Length: 184
Image (cartoon, rainbow, N blue to C red):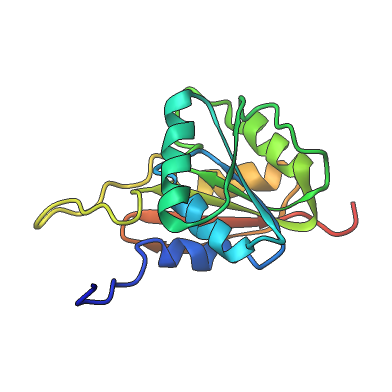
């Protein structure tokens, strides 16, 4: 028996920034804790799909555990994000979750591949910085994102995305969006 209601999800801001809708195909590149993908999958529902792309068996187990806790259906693909398995022009939203700050990743190749699979009118959402729900400690500020907004916007614009903009910054996390033009 529960005595207290659970509070809002620590991913509430991230979910609002992603803006997924029921029935959409959302590709999340980077597993993180798996919780964001699980929350997105609860929105896309049974008529949509949420697919996480990451490398490693540990990432797959993490995503599967988060999906099971949330009661969500999340697919997992253990492949390199520079060669996505999705067909071109099919994905509604691509979420790059804490990927562009990684010095081992070819940012331009990753962004180009995200744009390739994105349908016309689709969106790329870049999330950089602290994982939602993590607290930096008493009196400490969250660490700054590993890559700045201007660099991300320039990268997205260079791949052909339009309307690149900073959606917001909250609790040490930066949210940036780019939209694929409807007419190419």
